Length: 508
Ligand code: AMP
Image 1 (cartoon, rainbow, N blue to C red):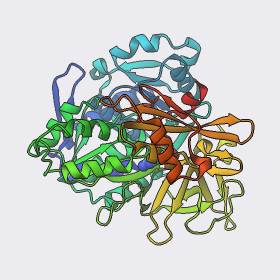
Image 2 (cartoon, protein in one colour):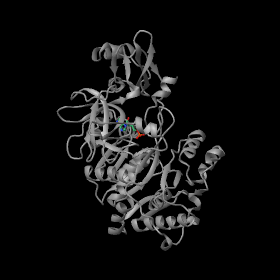
Image 3 (cartoon, protein in one colour):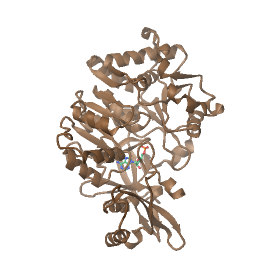
Image 4 (spheres, rainbow, N blue to C red):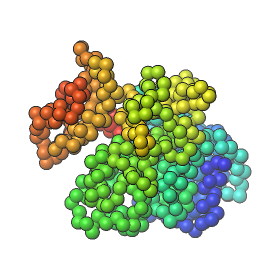
């Protein structure tokens, strides 16, 4: 089975169902039924084929959340071609790297992005035969009856998604149709997706959260996607109150922004009773955010954990306890192991270690980087490949629930002791006046490294009782974990998905 087969099911069963509700590039509303969406994709596929696009060719997308993103993606995978999404925040060097590395024949973008694309070195754009602008997409459409669809196998690539690259050059994770299918079918079952669902999607389609978890699941379920160009608090609150959406997917920073507004609303104004599920992922959701959201809305956020290379790995249950601060248990079809980060030997239940995963959801390889692919996994005695997530974690031996403790390269080792930044950050964020905390290691002549904390203060409390905070940390943490310094910043550097970019703090 490939993704085209999967999407054909709702297209044939409910052609008149609303698939996509969104806005065009000129701001006008767009509504497409399943039949209209897939007809448009077929016409575009016919047009692209007539101009020579073939199976295995790459098509880069540098585009905001627009209907054309969805139409063109469906056209590309119909042809067995490969979509390469580019983060819209990327500029000259980052875009140049992805274009040079993936060598796409076509680039899909919009007029608003042309000034940025013009700055990219011509040498990096060497493989491009054409730039398709969404404003001119109609000119690329052709008679759909002319389309000769190629055979697309489950192991053919659907996507090359570039990782955020906080530890070096970003790598292209090659995802097959089967890899994406594995995540999608796991989530359809685990989160009880239904055709009556409507997903409010404000996350960017260039990232796995918006694209794979959001759009793919909604299309596979035969549900409606309410696609928004970006997250705007007031607009989201209006949507949530409207009774139309049943699902919302966010990253923690979006929930923090929502909470800020919710505190000021009356119970009627924060009545989201039509909603069935709020999910969070891509970065750690503070237990406090989870609890405040429940207090104000009555909804328990379901936190899950995944990554570009693997799709989704673990999730809190749909029915069953959703534990704040935990990412739950493996999704259907995913196996996990906890190992020693240095030796890769299995560790005792309940110990802290490195998380490995295995399953059809795990990517095929890094694009044109066999040595990086080889480094990214270990093999067990049965010869099975386990992907090294790079995430440190602890699994509760009784419940099996997993708590993430931070990236392995963010682990601080002080005098031979391991310090997991997340534990200290959670504690600091529970102190009055601290809105956000990020703990990083700083070189130290005696201890090797010591933790220091970057703090963002809540607006109304610009003064932090630092002596009190030090005593609070000392009373609750082993002495080697207590931050050696508190540094105040207006905000933490975050990427497009709200992940704190600790390497930028360390470089300061
Ligand atoms: P990306 O490939 O951009 O999706 O980033 C994947 C990384 O995001 C994972 O390896 C984790 O470090 C982090 N991540 C994803 N979900 C969560 C979560 N629920 N809690 C904490 N970190 C997360």
